[in-house]
Amino acid sequence: MRVLLFGREGKVGSVLMSSLAAAGHDVEGVEIGEPVDATGFDAAVDFTAPLAVRGNAVTALSAGVPCVIGTTGLTEEALAELDALAREQRVACFVAANFALGAVLMMRFAAEAARSFPQAEIVELHADTKLDAPSGTAKATALLMGGDVPIHSVRLPGLVAHQEVILGGLGETLTIRHDTTSREAFVPGVLLALDRVRGLPPGLTVGLDALL
Ligand code: NAP
Image 1 (cartoon, rainbow, N blue to C red):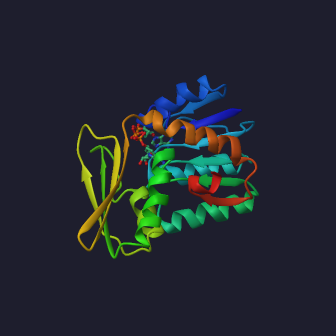
Image 2 (image 1 turned 120 degrees about the vertical axis):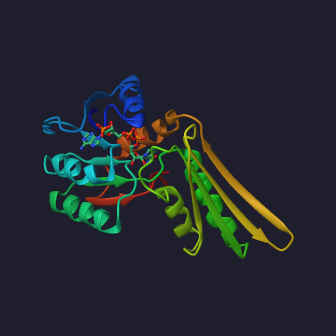
């Protein structure tokens, strides 16, 4: 596939540049401020910053190019706008807060465990360069667990992306933990999304779970 990658030089983008090419895709990377013509691409991938997503999505979707968006920190309004834009252009737009397969399983297990424990809290830990808090994964996990789950955010150098869901009950606790030790963890999920995005209905699809 011909893939347009927004965020070429970012921590995730730079890993994707080489990994998507190694998987056989023809990847063209774009950095902030560079002119873009999305015509002729099969899909666009965005790992940039919350304020950059709308412009990048408009560029891709208005050229009829489906989008795979990994950038987090998007508000409900921003997601609704992406949905409207994608429907208007009759193109699919896929958004996932976490492309690591283990993180998707962690969310599933946490949702299941929440049915058996009266209380739970989430601790999410990320690199100090992450712009948004709490993380999109923590918010999505809390929602799957029924909504009322406190989230604690830790930002420190040396961390990549980690999350613990701690559930407490009478005389016991259960901890479900996922650790991303390198940004290569996001590659299989992005490849899966690229493989599927053209078959998705027009408008927004949210979460890797929807593709598994
Ligand atoms: P990063 O290292 O700051 O990379 C972002 C890159 O995007 C930077 O090179 C930045 O350039 C560039 N950029 C900003 N605006 C742009 C635009 N309009 N067009 C093209 N490029 C633009 O951040 P990161 O760690 O790679 O993460 C990027 C995003 O992905 C964050 O929102 C993060 O939370 C999210 N993320 C998601 C997942 C997931 O699984 N969904 C996993 C990891 C990270 P400048 O440096 O010049 O501004």
